[in-house]
Image (cartoon, rainbow over the protein chains, first blue to last red):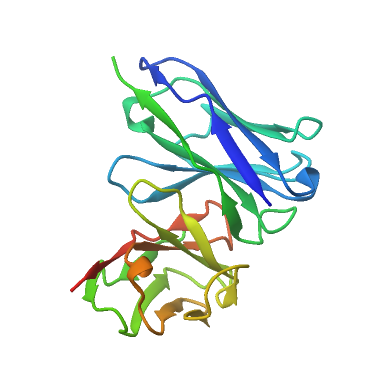
Length: 121
Length: 107
């Protein structure tokens, strides 16, 4: 059974930094791309980043490019999202999701339960 | 960026109804389209990928169709557990983009 478990979300002040983690199990971790998708309170889903199977192809939404970095440690079956220069508008539940293939072009097929990031002074 | 527009934004229906949700892309995306279901306070659940392929474990009352710029999600006989918000997403090119969602409510 595929499982994705996010952690690291918390209340943080604007301008601060945070690292989210997503620990995966139940599939061959390095064979699939993984994505971060967020959802602000009462809003629609927003794609944030996709990291290819060996971190060789990482893409970002314009709203986070230059501030967020997606990475993965295939030896630990863990996906990360390093978040810098956080803004109030980054407040959201952050979901980790598995793609259907290595490149990120297979469609998301499994989701974690999400971790809440609140940016506020 | 490719814009994804869903219609309607919300709909009211009864158990047993057949409903259809439309998703339009601002440019052609082939069949690189997925559908998701989300219930309040829960993570999304993947329903369909590649426009019409059902994810494992998804009931056969769900179906998807379309290609290019116009896509549909159909629920052939609405069940009580299907009342939720539905999202489409294109993964043809980056940035991947979602529709604004369609809320299916009980009539």
